[in-house]
Length: 392
Ligand code: CMC
Image 1 (tube, rainbow, N blue to C red):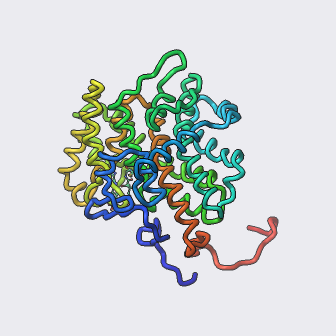
Image 2 (cartoon, helix red, strand yellow):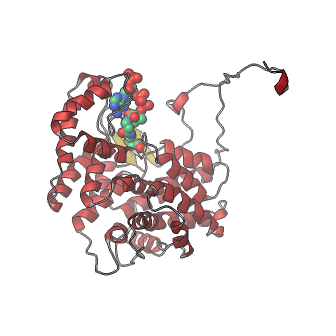
Image 3 (tube, protein in one colour):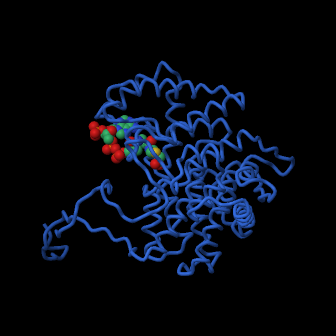
C-alpha cells in the first residue's frame, strides 16, 4: 500500500501556497489579498477586485481605467463561435454550453497556449474574464431563441452583461443601477474562494501545462455539481418546492433524517463553521433588490422563515450549519429575472477571475509540480489470468 496519508476530500491537506485569499472558517473571515470581503463587496467593484486578485494590489485610477479598457476590448467572441452554439439543443443546460464553448476557445487562441510566457498568460486571463459575460449571455439567448447581442463598449462590465442577457436589438436597454450594483456585488462575492473543488480542479488541470481555456472548462465542469456551484440553483428550486411557510417543518425534518438523502440546499459549508461572511452581505442585498424592484416573492418569505427555524434547531446548531452565500443569491438572481438554470453560469462567470489568478500563481510558483495524488489500494492481490472458457 505505501506510506501515504489518507485524507478523503482533502479536508486537511494543503495542496499549494497561495497569497490570494485567506479564510478563517471559525471566525467567518474572508480576505482577498488582505482586504475583507465585506468592504470589497460594499465599496469596490468587480473590475477592481479582479485587478486585485490578478495583480496583488488595488489599482490606482489610471491602472483601473487601463484594466477596464483592456477587458472591454476583449469582450467579443470569435464570430465562428456563434455557429458552435447552434450545435447545441435549445434546452441544453447553460453549464453544458459553457463547458463546451470555453473549452473550444483553446482552438481559437493559439498564442495563449504558450503558458511559459507571463505576458501570454495575462492575455489569456484577460480574454477569459472579458469573454465570460458574452459566453454566458449567449447561452441564455440561445436557450430562449432570441438573437445574440454584441457587447457594447460604453457600458460597465456588469451593465454590459445585463444588456447582452436581457436586451433585444429592437430597443434600447436601460441598465437599472440598483440591479447593476447588486449583480456586481454577487460577482465580487463569488470571485475567489481559495482551494475549493473547482479551483483545485483548475490547478490540477493546469499543473500538466494544459491550455488555459481547457483548464477553465474543467473548472466549469466541477463547479456545475449541486454540492458546489450548483447549490444556488438547487437552493432556489428547493425554496420553490417548499412553496409555503407552513411546509417548512416537513423539509427540516427530512434534512435531519439520516435515512433521507435530502439536505437543505444553501446550508452548510466545508470551511465556514460559524457563518459565511458572504451570506451576511448577500442577506442585506436581497432586501435592497426586492424593494427596489418592487418584487414581492413568496420564495423570500420561505427563505427567511427557513433560515430562522433552522438557526434555532438543535440539529443545525450542533452541526454548525448556517446559510451560505448561495442561499440568498438565488433569491436575488430570480428577482432580477434569471431562470434558475443560469445561476451556476453566473457563478462560473465570476469565479473565472479567481481561477485565472490561481492558475497564474501556480504557473509562476517554482515549487509547483504536476498534481499527482496517491491512493490506498483496496483491490485484489496479484492473481493469474484465466482464459474465458476456463472461468467458472
Ligand atoms: N442539510 C442537512 N444536513 C447537512 C447539510 C445540509 N445542508 N450539510 C451538512 N449536513 C450534515 C451532514 O449530514 C453531516 O451529518 P453527520 O455528521 O451526521 O454525517 C454533517 O452535517 C457534516 O456534513 P458533511 O457533508 O460531512 O460536511 P462537508 O464539509 O463535507 O460538506 C457541504 C459541506 C457544503 C457539501 C454540505 O454542507 C452540503 O451538502 N450543503 C448543501 C449544498 C450547498 O449548499 N453547497 C454550497 C456550498 S457554498 C458554495 C460553494 O462553495 O460552491
